[in-house]
Image (cartoon, rainbow, N blue to C red; front, side, top):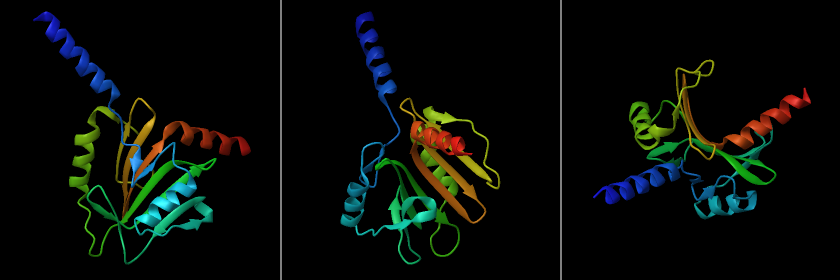
Amino acid sequence: MKKIIAIFIFFFVCLMSSAQINKTILGCTIGQSTLAQVKQTMKSQGIKLKYEKNADAYIYISDSKYVSFGGVKWNGVGFYFKNDILYQVQFQYFIGGENKLRERDFTRALENKYARFKQEVETPAGAHYSKFYRDNTNMVVAFTCYPGSCILQYFDDKVFDRIATENSDEL
């Protein structure tokens, strides 16, 4: 009986340690998908991307259409690349109009899925709400609400930090 319990505990620990934050968003995999692959995947879903030079990202934004993800109709989605590899996907939601984000319900869904990865972080300036989750592979989910909009980000923290370091080195 002790052997069976020990095996059960071993498998449970293995399962928990292998659980990760979702890396595949809208069919594109963070840390693997190239720009060409993301463009093709979005095209197959009827989403046309435009290059936003200031943001150094391919961004889809439309006033009349939405991008559905996680049960929410987002106003836009951005794909960020470093050396032609996807490292961040960011959704944006503008509060108001016919599209109603139930911030509390969405936060509860994130909490239910990623509670074991929750990390306490300082709420960004101007934001009234922020949740942050990081797994053991450096994948991060961040959900931040500002007056008038909410942002959901999935990103590889290692690449994000490397870019921040490169940018500060330029100063």
